[in-house]
Length: 159
Image (cartoon, rainbow, N blue to C red; front, side, top):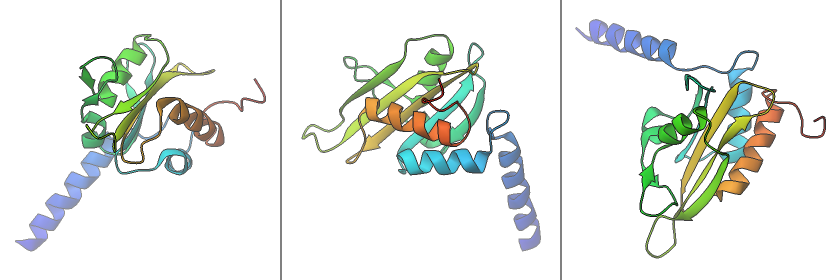
C-alpha cells in the first residue's frame, strides 16, 4: 500500500514539473532562478514571464499560490495578483512600477513591477509583499539586472 502511495506521489510530482513553465528559449532556468532569487528572493515574491500578446507563461519564480495571491493594486481600492498584472502586460498595458502600504500601521507594503523585456517578444510581471517589500521601481531595476545576468536581455551598457 505504501509503495502505491509513493508511486502516485512521485507521478504527481513529475506531472506537475512537466507542466510548469521552465524558462524562455535560450535561457538557463537555474541561472534565471539564481539571478531572480539574488535580486528579489523572498517567500512572498512572484516573478512571471510570458509571451507578449498571448500571455503564455514561459517562466514562473515561486508557486501558483504566491503568484495568484491578491494584494492592493496601489490604484484606489482595487486588488490584483501577479497573474492579473501579467495578463494586462501581455496585452500591451504600460510599464508599471508601483508600491503602497498593505497594513494600516504601514509596517507591510506591496511592490509591483511589469513591462516588456527589451529585444524579446516577452513581458514580465512581479509582486513582492511583506515588511521588507521593495518599491516597484527598485524591483524593476533589480529585475533588469537579473535578466541581464541570466542572459535574458542584453546588458544596458550594450544597448
